[in-house]
Amino acid sequence: MSIVVAQAPVAYSLMTSASGTSAQVIQVSSTGTSAGLTAGAFTLVSPSSNLLNGRLFNVTVTGWIKAHGATQTVAPGLQILPWNTTVAGGPTASGTATFTPVASGTLTAGTFYNFNISQDFFGDASTNTLTCKAPTVYAAGSSISIVSTASAQTVAFASASQTEPINGVNNTTDYPLASFAVSFTNSVSDTVETIQLTQFSLQVI
Image (tube, rainbow, N blue to C red; front, side, top):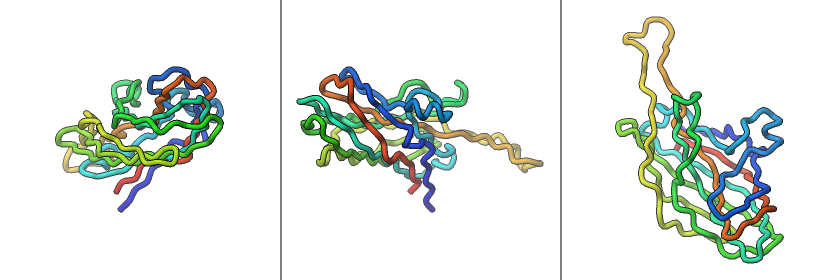
């Protein structure tokens, strides 16, 4: 059985200002906020945590970038935000990189480049962890070799609250396991950079 989720509507992802050289997370565009999305990091919410217990699943990201800097390189990355049920039932404010991003080759100003990230994860409720497998990353026409992958991430699997045997409505408690966000790291500050996602999905394998 394969379950695919893609709650993040990729038409509303955008980064048109990317000043600085630290990792920056793609944001929800103004069109997205006008359509009712929450302003801030553009995130993909996982299925319910118990659905991912003992399951291998994949997160896939594709998109494009228009380069501007003459000596610019970019390092696409993926961040995880463990679901936090104590703060408005949503993800925490800051994410953790699921692998150490590696820079692409030098880009040509004014040129469009595609990129892709594909990474597998394994959920384990017995340890409340999410194992990050080695990802496949592609940018600017070349495969990028990733050397360092994040250690197992602490997450919170929901525990059932329903009494046994069930009497009436099944009221087991469940919530998403995590949210994911896409990051970019520039070698030089680029205040007119344009990035767009074309796919951001999670598939239970």
